[in-house]
Length: 212
Image 1 (cartoon, rainbow, N blue to C red):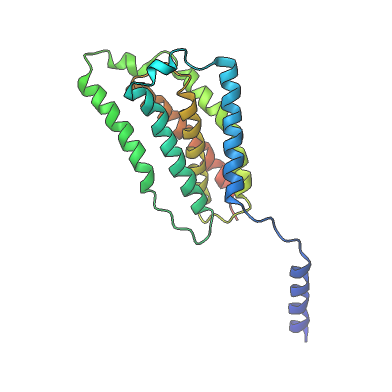
Image 2 (tube, rainbow, N blue to C red):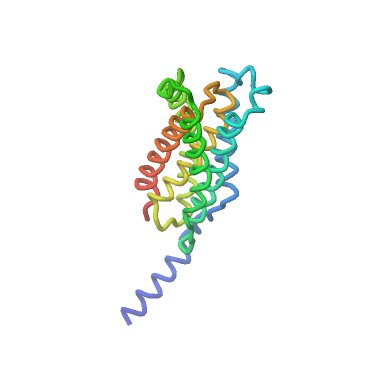
């Protein structure tokens, strides 16, 4: 009788407990995108777009430094949401395409440059690039981590890394509209480093917040 009463008590307790909020992938994406676009809009209001954006956009490297991070961001956010489901399967190979294209651009620049490759890679705005992408990424990443607490990621660190990469790459794609450093050596190096930093922060937050 004791076991039966204990089971019935447990069932009553579970029935009386509040239903946890369901995870909404659409809400997570819209919330993060809204904060990301709002942060970029504020950044542009303060620092502006590059003055020659219209004419510069006709050049492949200028297009690539926005399009490739955008593709990386879309792939990473899709994988992050897939990893937030216990039964989710998420091959990581979709992340490779934009990364490999970026590396190919950098290698082509090395092969065709006359010299001053170090100066191109270092550029004039490396620290501003890192700080800007990290700063604008902070709130969207934090919101994404909090919303994914409602899900059940089976690998919380990886989910956090993917969410960080998605956020950092999305912000980098927007920041490129302000940046006047067009060498693939610069943006592959520094945008890539900024995305890795935000991804690392996302992994740490995933370990701290998303474990269950």
